[in-house]
Length: 203
Ligand SMILES: Nc1nc2c(ncn2[C@@H]2O[C@H](COP(=O)(O)OP(=O)(O)O)[C@@H](O)[C@H]2O)c(=O)[nH]1
Ligand SMILES: [Mg+2]
Image (tube, rainbow, N blue to C red; front, top):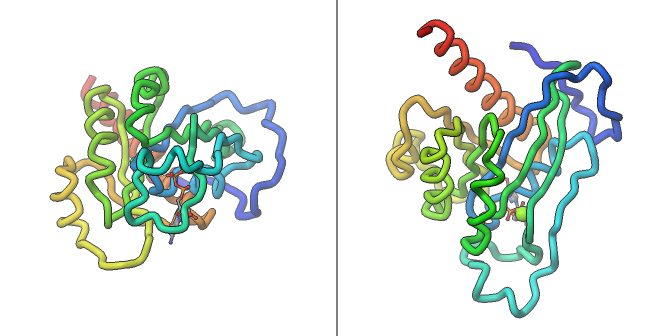
């Protein structure tokens, strides 16, 4: 599948009139795993975000382990948009990873076609809950390992640690890169298409 996505950085392109295929995608994962960064990297619009500078009060609530230098936290969610082709627009929702916002997820997942679970290999356990909820909802997803440097587990070891179904695609990414983040979304869309054609064949 060949998607013509511009490599140009976030242009302010108006939504195409012919776009008739709006797909809702959520990006989930633990705190500081790169959700806001990914939504910003790929968005064609200036993404809405509700980042707030972490206050002293947030310390101890937001787990900063391994996230040195992170000074803002997503309070509600990120929203962005990317045109995959002239007819297909992805609406991206970056959902907060913090435990105190988990009650938002069930609503957010309504009408969601698929999800990206971002993981930081140094803090895999932070993404277990997201995977658990997606499996519970039956929402198709892929896993993207965001590159924070450090040791690399083999894909097999990573799958083991996440107890991942072998059919769930696993990709590497750098959420700061538009090209890399686009590749994550394309992997998800291709996975959704593969699932849809498997369903057609079965029926
Ligand atoms: N080294 C590295 N840092 C990243 C990457 N993606 C995000 N970051 C940084 O990690 C921090 C947390 O990212 P953020 O997008 O706010 O995480 P969120 O809590 O999941 O929204 C920020 O300081 C980012 O600049 C990446 O791929 N590599
Ligand atoms: Mg964020």
